[in-house]
Length: 301
Ligand SMILES: Nc1ncnc2c1ncn2[C@@H]1O[C@H](COP(=O)(O)OP(=O)(O)OP(=O)(O)O)[C@@H](O)[C@H]1O
Image (cartoon, rainbow, N blue to C red; front, side, top):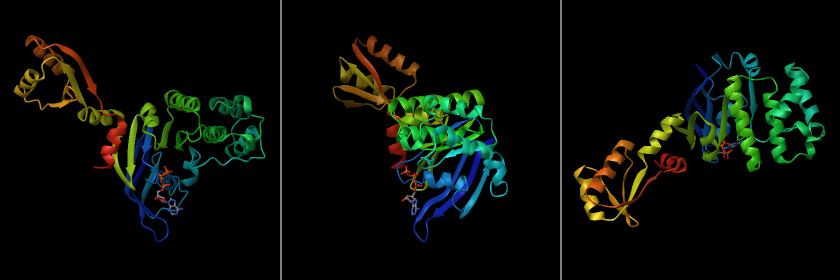
């Protein structure tokens, strides 16, 4: 079951160039879906289309199993979102900001304190939102999104403006929400490191096109295929012969030999072979391409 199924979304602003080209994405229920792409890739536009914040020009959107265009109100009651910069009432305290939405969503008064604590604003409830830092406004906007206990949470760049501690806190809060309540969470970001640490699934968008969609382990498998193993050894010529005899392509790299990533059993066998041939093995290291590299490889084809 998918919490979001968007098919063939295309979009252009006015008479401009298309900014989305047949974007199709599927967010599995109970996943943390990292929606990743560089600035201007089309993340916000896609999320706005999914939430009906801009008018759909092509394609279809199903949210929580229902057609969005026909069940808008009932669906939005189960969805929490934060799109673009947080909009809060600056003259009102954090608590009063939440009271505005409490009336809309008809949740209990105690829920306000609960969500303020969840986002780390427990002590700042009486402070005017206008005096908040960007990071605090961001936390308040996340609190608004959480107020009615949505089963689907859509957050566009939620860690914008947060300091490193704040990033960790919000990440842990989202992971806990996903784990304890089974909330499906879509988080967009241009920061791979952010998504890498919490997402179970990932969608990669670039220039309005989806380049990859799958689980984090599928992405990691892609990563291991692009990694290398570096051998620092006493006799490179002899080692090259041993590797070549096994059909392994090797190259020299900074006083060491580099071969494509192998299963750990093969690596163990290769080390035994080298030692049996009286080659001293000083170091064996995996030179893993990090997700940043895969991302760049994916977007540059
Ligand atoms: N109101 C608008 N009018 C015209 N073009 C727009 C408008 N909003 C966005 N665009 C363009 O649409 C493209 C996609 O923008 P979008 O904001 O969806 O990207 P994004 O992936 O969310 O980027 P970022 O990480 O910078 O927020 C960009 O080329 C952007 O310039």
